[in-house]
Amino acid sequence: MIEVILPALDEAEAIPAVLAAMPAGFEPLVVDNGSVDRTAEVARRCGARVVSEPRRGFGAACFAGLVAATSDVVCFMDCDGSLDPWELPLVAGPVARGDADLCLGARVAQPGAWPWHARVANRVLAFELRRRCGVAVSDIGPMRAAHREALLELGLRDRGFGWPLEMILRAGGAGWRIGETRVSYGVRSGGRSKVSGSARGTFRAVRDMGALLG
Image 1 (cartoon, helix red, strand yellow):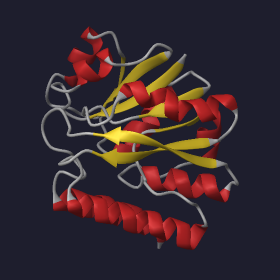
Image 2 (cartoon, helix red, strand yellow):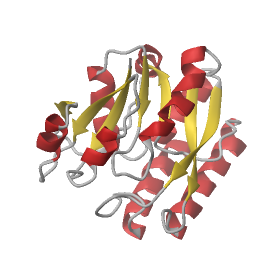
Image 3 (cartoon, rainbow, N blue to C red):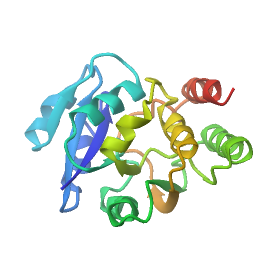
Image 4 (cartoon, rainbow, N blue to C red):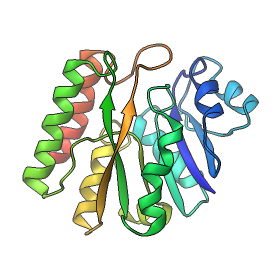
């Protein structure tokens, strides 16, 4: 069984469909990051294990899930409906087989799924990763897989939007084999993305990630 860590902030509308689409062999672990809607209640009703991380922050939720998980290989994925759980085996497979230490889902966006400001920011950050650190990735996407114990040993410190980039930076510095596989990226099921849904959210993410590159 591979646990899928799902950081969740006010995702009560989207989460039932995400959990229903979870493929065999993958077990959802929802981290309620201080939601004011019924995210935790809905997730439990759908059969998911739920842990609480009241301290706000994408990295804080991801780290809480990583600590709570027990499987050897873990996946991370947004639970807003923009990513397809059926593609998790594409990301987890290389790690489970020993072909990669960290595998990232490089997003192929459907029309309207990825605002221009978020797309540009992502490309710039990926370029800086390649230029400064020699880590050849095209997307700093939220769907990814790695061995749980190895991730804990990396000592990730960022608890905000810089978490995904810090993981790649530290993994590259530790000599990990980092791979990518293409995954679909659609329009989220409900509400607005905390990162790409506004220029302000994108700016906050770039600020957090840029501080790591600086």
